[in-house]
Amino acid sequence: MVTYKLTTPISEEDARKLRVNDVVYITGTIVTARDQAHHRALQFHKEGKELPINFEGLALFHCGPIVKKEGDRWIIVAAGPTTSTRMDIFEDEFIQNFKARVIIGKGGMGKRTTDAMQKYGAVYGAFTGGAAVLAAKAIKSVKTVEWLDLGMPEALWILETEEFGPLTIAIDSHGNNLFEDIKNKTEENRIPIYRKLGIQK
Amino acid sequence: MNLEETVENVAVNLLRFAVTELPKDVKEALQKAYREETSEAGKTQLKAILDNVELAEKTRTPMCQDTGTIIFYVKAGAEVKHLDKIENALRKATRRATTKVPLRPNAVDPFKQKNTGDNTGRNIPYINWEIVAGDTLEITVLPKGGGSENVCTMGMLVPGEGINGLKKFVIDSVIKAGSKPCPPNILGVAIGGGSDIAMKLAKKALLRPLDQPNPDPELAELEKELLEAANSTGIGPMGLGGKITVLGVKIDYAVRHPASYPAAVAFNCWAARRATARIYPDGNAEYLTHKLR
Image (cartoon, rainbow over all chains, first blue to last red; front, side, top):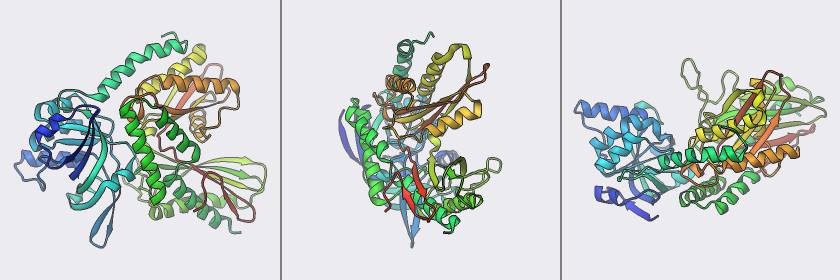
């Protein structure tokens, strides 16, 4: 396990250095996107429309934050990760087309995303579920917000962060998927646990 | 005293305490988990959880952006007057806390998919009533997170399989839930009564502090056995691998119909929030889980 402090834009080479179980802190630009923002971004790409932000080398955060407005400034109150598996249907195309290098969320992602990360050079960083205050503390400012018509949680919040983390690398660009490994190990443990509890299968 | 006003003010405090500060027993269990966890990824998660809990307490900010569905448990002394005013007082308190704390608006009309915006709506906040002897009113709030709620299980097991059927049901539920309920979790487990009764008892069991084992020695033993089994799955903190998957198992039961063996498992996430206060006839409130601040 190695701890890395990365600054955006993150190169493909830097992303490929990371291995599962490494811990990463990110300084620079992180953009929030949930289901609807993914959907719209891919739609824009298909129609040849320009996106409001260039994602290349940035981190994408599966998060619907609580944001308040003070004067004309936006302030992030709480910004914990949301469940990433919902974005599995979009993420391979997203990584291929927009070259985001780090995807941040909770709960892990599936094979499609893992394959895309291997092919195009990106990683998945797990942020602790519910640790919303810790996340908000590392967010120094809201640079801007796009697609606010999707609603506060679904908009693209473009955030300036300082040492955002700890992110545990759970999918790397070498085909490793920590959540899948754990799931397989858990399955192997099932029968021995039954036996210890005196359960006939 | 004006009971409605007192209850409203006390309940706003309870909601604020609950979402910003974990009860002592949960904090201590998380600290112990951090000391005992051996997987590096698991330790990283527990450290982040502890840092987050401390920061939330210090800045009086909700520890998780999901401030839950609001559930109250009310133990009403039979001598307390104007009990009919309490429901309205708790609804008003929920609305006030939503803007004041703030809480995330988490009440959505299931047909129109529209968020009511203030955490109240038909049957929510939900109130569990219990009439007891005496002249005091004890109010507990349980803000229940959605991630852990989504993996709760209810099963009508085969009576002939007995307690082994229950054990298998609990372990299967934990393995199936995996990383989803933001482990380490607390499990409320209940058997008997009927489908609704089992789930109600399971959820209510989540209120028993982690440092209080079951008063029935046999059930205390079963709680320990299931805890050890759940912590042998390898799921670990946030599902990233490790030995601490569950912080505690709390069991309750009702006698059952000869043909039925209802079992329920209620999951709570690491942010196992709850707060309790007792209101006396003179209007004074004693906070049982938190220091007034």
